[in-house]
Length: 337
Image (cartoon, rainbow, N blue to C red; front, side, top):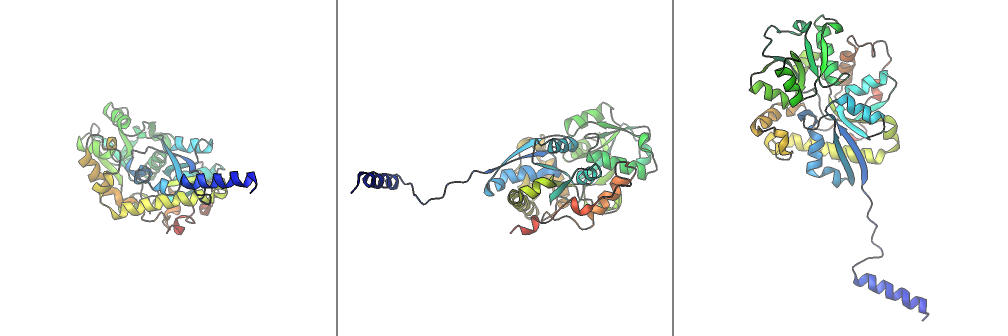
C-alpha cells in the first residue's frame, strides 16, 4: 500500500477514535443582530427582554444584542445611522419617517394600544382636561417621540394650538418622576411601571388613559398599533431569512404572553425592572397585558388611526402621500408555525 494511503487511513482512524465524524456538518455561526429598544424596562416593550430571557433568539440561531435607549426617537436615529439593524419602538415612526422620505416597516406588531397615560401632577388640580394644559409644560420621552406625537394630538383635539403647550423631554422612570416632583412638568405622558409608581404615591392622577384597546378607541378614535419591531425596508429585502427568524422568536414570545399569567411573565424579567415593587409590577402587567397582540399581526384598522393622529396639526405629515402598505408587513409573522 502506498505510504500516502497509509497516512490517510491512520488519520481517519484517529479522527474516529476521537469522536469526530467526517460527515458531521460544520456548526453555523449565529446570525448577529443588534436591536435598539426604546426603554426595555418599559412594560410596553417587554417582549424584547422576554424573548431573550426565554432563549427564543438562540433557538432561532440568532445572536441578538439588545441596546437600551430611553427615547424611541433616538432609537430611530440609531437605525437610520446604520448603528443597529432593528428597533423595538412605536409603529408610528414608520409613518412619520415615510413623510420624510425614509422607508422603515414594522415586521412584528407587538401591541394594539399605546399603553400610555397622560398623568397630571397632584400639585395642579386645576388641570381637568387636555384643554387645561394651555400654558403648561408637559413631559414627553423625547422631542419627536411617540409620546410627543400623542400629546400633540390630544391638545390639538382639545382646541389648542401646538404652541400653547411646551413639550419637555424628560425620559421615563426616575427622570420623569423627578421632573414632576420638581414641577419642571405639570403633566406628562408615560408608561408602566412609571404610571403605577406615581399613582401609588398619589403624586399624580390620570387625565387620559390609553392602556387598553377600549380606552384607546375612546381617546384616539380607533385601534392604535404601538409597540412593534421595525427595520429599514431595504434591510428586509436583503435579509429575509434573518427577518423570519426574528419574527419566529417574537411571535413565540407574544404567544407566551397570551398563555401565561402576569406573575409568570414577571418571573422571567430582570428583577431591577420591578423598581422595588414586584407586586405593583405584576398588577400593572396584569391590567395591561391585553394590549399585546397574540400573533404579531397588524390590526386591520390600526394604520389608518395612526395616520389620522399624526396628521392632526403635524406639518410633516399633512398633505404628504403616505402609502400605509409600505409601513408594515405581516409576511413573516403569518409564516410562524
